[in-house]
Amino acid sequence: MTRKAVLLPILLLSLALFAGCAKKNEPLSATGFYFDTVITITLYDSSLGKKENDALLDACMDLAAYYENLLSAQKEGSEIWQVNHSNGAYVTVSDDTLSLLSAALSYAGLSNGLVDPSVGPLSSLWDFGSGGRKQVPADSLIRDALSHIDYTKIELKDNNVRLTDTASSLDLGFIAKGFIGDKMKQFLINNGASSAIINLGGNVVTVGQKPDGSPFKIGIQKPFAPAGVAALTMELSDISVVSSGNYERYFIADDVLYHHILSTKTGYPVESGLSQVTILCENAVDADALSTLCFLLGYEKAAALLHENYPDVRAIFITQDGGIIYHNMSPDICREP
Image (tube, rainbow, N blue to C red; front, side, top):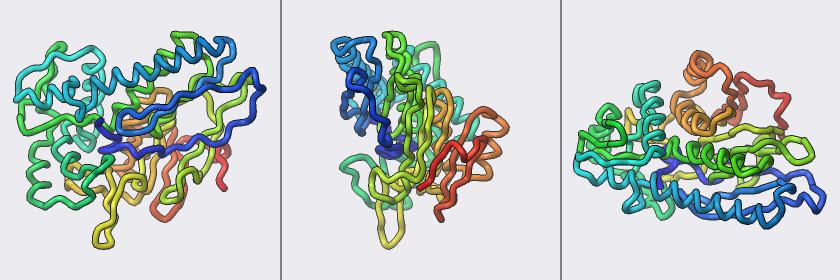
């Protein structure tokens, strides 16, 4: 589907080893492939019973399929696909799609289009998804794509959506999985779960804490290291943690690294001096959008934006030379190798 930060890297966050539980509290997990990435839901509740937990996990996967069928630009017949292929006509969409588009437009306005839900013409040119072409598009094609990226040409009228530029197209990769993570968390809570982890291809949402009252241990992937090698680990409860980086979806051509986080100003992968940004906050939809936006901005501008607009949000910046900068948080909660 639409991919993170034009796109979200697969498994940017790895779940570190969890402290052992008594057998009666052994966690149950389900894994699926949605949104062009692997997702895993793990339940730690023992009070619900195995049968109830199994049913809840199945329902979570059904929910993932539901949102993919709504929000994937690549899924023929989805609501986003219909908007992209409506030739400028209004398309009636669900409340969920409308809510996500509204949030995406809010971030587009805040960032003056640095993150933009109409980025589809550009992201489809580069195609960093599974099976991508891994080649640099021609300058002329990039310039043409940029001329059709303009969030102000997305019109919302009640539950109707249209693109006034018929050559434009929606790609909600910078925010969609965060939105879905929040929906899944609320679904689990509404159905009696009080201890769980949702991992949507690196967007990690924790529900409560472990049954013994201890926090979950979350590892942040070390840029360009083998999968599962952590730059640092944190012990966290009831929070969303999302990373954006330049090291999961990329290719090298003529000794130049081209990664998936694209500038809507130049049409090329952004050069911000960062390898990764991790956002920690209550809502996954905000963590998702902000991780991409902060990566695009670079550390100084990102820190200023967070300070002014999101004073409660915590962040970790990893620079291209491997330095780690903590924003609005003490490094004492993190453990570095």
